[in-house]
Length: 112
Length: 115
Image (cartoon, rainbow over all chains, first blue to last red; front, side, top):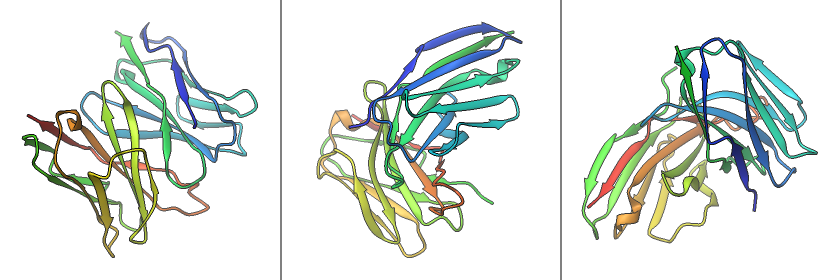
């Protein structure tokens, strides 16, 4: 069974800092990997999806990378802003059957 | 396009009752997945429906069931509620096409509290 781990569990940074969130998965045979953000008590907002054949995806200040051989993905956030404060979750789709295995998340706080 | 909608947003039930939650996917999306989120277990997959057929099921007891209608709307039902069923229930829809690579879009969730 796929297991997804996110480190650190919580992170506080001053505004303007660049930061990296980490995601590890045990089974490298994934179909895709998605990054989401979740605000308290809310649903998930899709940030980036990396296909299994891709190495990275970029959207604005966000860049996600994927290294299947090492079972790792990273989410890079440039020039962090207080509005980036949220919990960030990574999820691996093992078979393309829309069954996501989620990590436990990293709670990010950006201090003004 | 409207996003994924879930109703109701909040529910309070007592042990032993049953509950039905509803999810309307993004227009044109044919796949609907359900997830349970709790502080202790995090986000866990319940089941996925495509074209009215359940294709995948997570490791949950038979008290949890679902269905999908011809318009892709989906419902999930939990019978004989237990205290541990208190959770945020999230629905996600996906176009399930090669070009989308199955990107999933989530609704705001239904917060279920079992007393």
